[in-house]
Length: 260
Length: 129
Ligand code: SF4
Ligand code: SF4
Image (cartoon, rainbow over all chains, first blue to last red; front, side, top):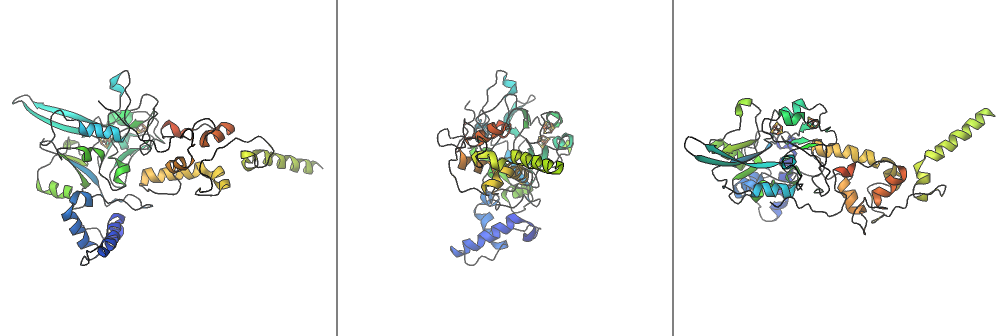
């Protein structure tokens, strides 16, 4: 781990270092605090090292930027496991008479190159833009970007005006049209507000991966800290060509694609 | 004499609006709501403070959790529900349940549960296409 930030201004790293003290007692006696422990952890299991739970009482850190890397070459035709996992995890279950009104936090997209018939599959969701237009246009401040790059709707202040739905170039947001009852306790959602992929913020804060990433049988999705040069996702982005969808808009999405 | 009358009137008004003397029949001066408390005695703050300030506590906590990402604070709506959901209905919203009983008594509309899940231990299932 060669992160430029000092451990003091990154609570997550400080926490990992503290956890290292505990691990040392279990047999890793030669691990020096902080630096070396993280090198071991990222070598052993890069994906899980990228997602340590944040300590209770600490705020999300701007030294972290959560993101996804999606490999369209691995995404299987006809598979909707990530979509199902997302909607199960987040309790998105309504089936309205007009299906266009059902919420979509993530969708499968199929691209066909008409010249040669090449078909590309990929899941599409909120791209967690670094410069999110949904936040720019929101009149109430409900659309917001958390310090660690996760873009959320604060339903406590959302008035359901849907400006953000118009502003989002990725069609990532949905409006909840009908009263809801069977919400997941960790994912409150209700009529009259706009919503979108939260990057499973409730799981990420516990140190888990987003439900879609965990569910993909092809291993086509990778989650991690884009700012941490030692994380698996950052190393992959540094070594293979990856694309941001509509990079020309300069929104700097936190979701990147491979093979499109 | 006039001053005394004003003072007495003010005192009476204070007693009338003071929730501690009316809620749950504490003072015995008025019929209180019948609150069924599933797990009494383990709250994050004394009863008097919770009665007056729970909405403020939850309001500030929700902003810190959502906007700053601070988790694991003592005040948490989910923690309230886990502890206080009725043993019969499993919820805080059924008739006579923890939240409903006081809010119905005080005629204060409860908006929390248009989005939040009022049942303890509930697991959403989502779509099965
Ligand atoms: S993808 Fe759309 S909803 Fe998500 S941050 Fe970007 S503009 Fe906002
Ligand atoms: S619908 Fe809600 S989040 Fe979107 S712009 Fe309007 S107030 Fe903001």
